[in-house]
Length: 407
Length: 125
Image 1 (tube, each protein chain N blue to C red):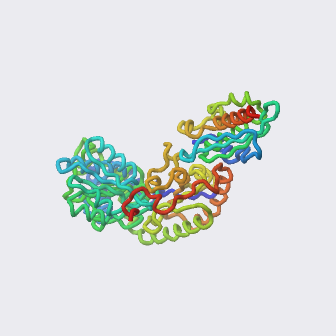
Image 2 (tube, rainbow over the protein chains, first blue to last red):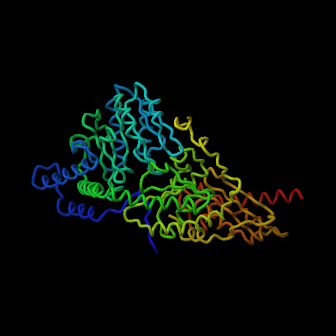
Image 3 (cartoon, rainbow over the protein chains, first blue to last red):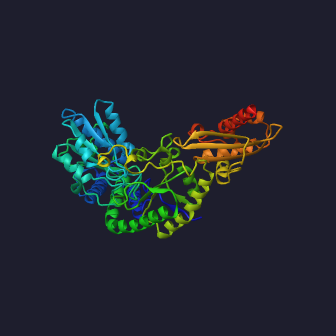
């Protein structure tokens, strides 16, 4: 059976060049980079070379890169570290309602430790409004953390404008760029952020490794990990050398391929979105129509449930994902879709297709061939009254209370 | 994650559809939770379930348990049918993942609601 991988926002296949890099590190360079002797020195070189590649990919200087165990650790470390180092300045943190759990739950945890939290709403496209950020800032605000691009709906946030506001008021700005890095340009100076999170396995690198960019001069300290002096006191623990060299290679390759790959993925994505929304009734694109990741297409299909669609697609060899409750392991559908004002019953019918460099137009055509009969079959089984149920309340009533929707 | 039996009932569900002029109809769940099961019954004079159909909005487990319960009760008396529990339906499918035991395992409840509907209609006659 044809196998089609459409879940690149979950993880990506490791590129052969990256595999080689990781294998070389495992087989030939086992030393501890902290060691003074020959074995250590060799590995130190590899780690620093990887740091230079990652720094170059995001416009940073190598000293500003700290290697971590991945996106979740980088987010925790960034947010917690800024909070702890700036307690004397203020206790207010601003974030958005559509953040990844790694950010959302870190911020909420700080909320229980005496910090005041503002969770900004989003509009129907999942976009944070810059005006809402302005309105939320107080003289106690010490940190704004808003993702660069959303994992579930692909919407790209106005980070540059928000960071400018933050900078003018002496507030630190963190962005989780796990989904955007490698897909659109991510440059810390153009974005104007102080801290930025990336992960290797979303850019065809290995799992379990990521990085946190910390701008020179940022009032931040390691507040979670206690231990040795690795990573210049910023991250204790012996470095994950094979992972780090893999991340370096993956970042280098991603940068070399970025312009070409963006265009290619956009072509696939645009055909997919156009065809799905015209070939199938009662389907909506979720997320922003233009300001979205080039590899990201997400939909809601009315009257049917996401996991049933995923299982049906899986039986046809297509791997996708959903924001339905059944796939999250809780009773609630995706917090992102709910924050966008999408009703529960429709959020249960969400499907996310995230494309990658190995996908082809034939893969898109295959999806377009198998999806309509799957939808028909499940709708035929659905007890929901497809004439009257889910009557959409349409327009701006659907969005919660984002400033951009009130106008 | 799912047993072969669950996947079989998901892929080839038994007794999908509606019954015209049913003797009893039962519905449980709601779209907000992501699961709705609706069961239709045809009951003969001997209190035997002659025909049963279902329609379900929900995940793989919801569809498979609905299909399984219809297979289990066809030809059974109402008394026998009322003894079927949600757990018995899950067991007949070779088990369900733990997190599905609560949210998607409601088929026996839908069946009971349909039988109750039949009883109350019959009582009114």
